[in-house]
Structure formats: structure tokens, C-alpha cells
Length: 317
Image 1 (cartoon, rainbow, N blue to C red):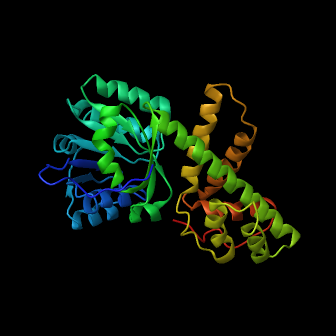
Image 2 (cartoon, one colour; image 1 turned 60 degrees about the vertical axis):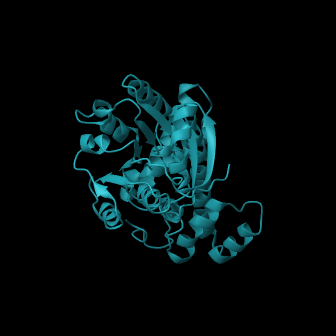
Image 3 (cartoon, rainbow, N blue to C red; image 1 turned 135 degrees about the vertical axis):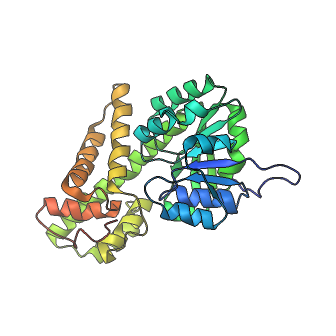
């Protein structure tokens, strides 16, 4: 469903929001929670202070510990690299679970494993807190613009409480069902995108070997049924060295595809294509390109064929 948000209603005290993980995606979401949504925001820094410092300049406050953050808010958002970091934040000695209280809602926007989400939710419930899974679709560009897609799962009462906050950074919100269902949908959706990216990378690498001009390839695909959003985001790097359309790290793509493989394995589903896609992203990370943005996969695939499109440090982050 599409959604719009005008901030807290007149006379209402806005919910106080804590944000853990103001990185590439989280900064834009947090900024829109604060500025577009009008919700008081508390953030906590980890390794990169730049996005946190920007939010502080915009009016957020900073917590020094997770305990301090939880004590001063009604809702805590997580936007972390993986399930491993979610576990760390939740189960640390002074983490979310240790400080959870009746009425607190934890919203996980990480792309995380559904079984981790459900376990964390069950443990929080023992403390009277609720959990909602709300992973993000689209890219950091849309995060800054408040135009993310959000997939939202969890108990009805908890979801209804946090929807106005989620709406502040989302163009579309899709309700997915019980806790964990949003993570499941996000992982499958991301696999489709990254599999598309892998196909594009191999196609571009082959085009280079056979001598097909990349501008010609771009015009052919753009005018045909093979065109896709992913193609339009990847090809600017091939044509111009521009990764700004798809600012997602290859190490994150590898993690997400590995999560899809785990989902398939857990239910004994076939995973022929997924296994091949996983190997390409695994190679990209193992060969030292994990910090580069995903469109560079085209150059890495070309390198496997003994060719080069452009210097692979173009697009490094």
C-alpha cells in the first residue's frame, strides 16, 4: 500500500525513537523520522561518526550506551549489517534485551534471518516488549528522499503503533503477516535482484569478449523485455564508471544471497541458480572487492574472462 505521513496529530505527544545503525540506509531513514515525521530522535554511534554527527546537527540527541538509548525512547529501530550484529545489539550485557521494558517496541530494518527475528521477538516478549520486522527496499538515494519501500511483519497492535514512524521514510509499505514474514519476503526479493545483477555481469563480460559495443548493448536491452531496474542501475558503471545508482556493497549482496541459500536449504528447496549466484558474489568478496558497490561485479566477471572494462578501484568505498 502507498502511504503518506504528516507527523504526530495535534495534541499528541510524538513517540520517542531510538536509532541503531545510521549507515548508508539508516541515515536517510533516521533523518526522515526526525525531520519529515517530527519524532524526537536519539542515535548511538558505532564506527562511522559522520552520519551520526549530521543527525545531531539536525536536532537528534546522542546516547552513549544502548541502556541509555532504550531508557529514553518508546521505539528502537535497528538497521545493521547482518543477523550477527542484531544478536550482538540485542544480547549484549547492556543490550536491548537487558534493558527492555513493558511497552517498548523494537523495529528491525536489518535484512536478517527470519529465525533470528522470531527468536529475538520471543525473548523480548518475555520482558513485555514487542518486535516488528520492517526491512527496507530500494537504495540509500531513496532513503534520503524518504521514498523507501518497507515490508512490515509482526503482531497487529505493535505494527499499528510504529506505522506512522515507518511511513515517514517510506513511499510504499507492504504488510506481510506475522513476525519474520517481512524478512522472508525481503530475502527472496533481494535474491531476485542480485541474481539479475549476476546475469547482467556475465552478459556484460561476454559482450566485452565478443566485441559488442556497450552503448549498443545498453540500447538493445533498454528497448526490450530484458530491461530491468537492476540493468538501469548497473550499466552506468559499465558506461561511465558511475556507481551512484546502486550504492550497495558487494559484501552485503553476498550476505543477502547467502541468506536466500539458507532459506532454501532449511526447507529442502532446489537452489540451482542461487548456488551459482552465490559463488559469483563469494568470489567478488574473496578477491578483495567486498567494500565496492554492486555494479563493479560486471568488471569482476570480466576479469574472470581475462578482460577488463575499467579499473576495479572505480567505485571503491
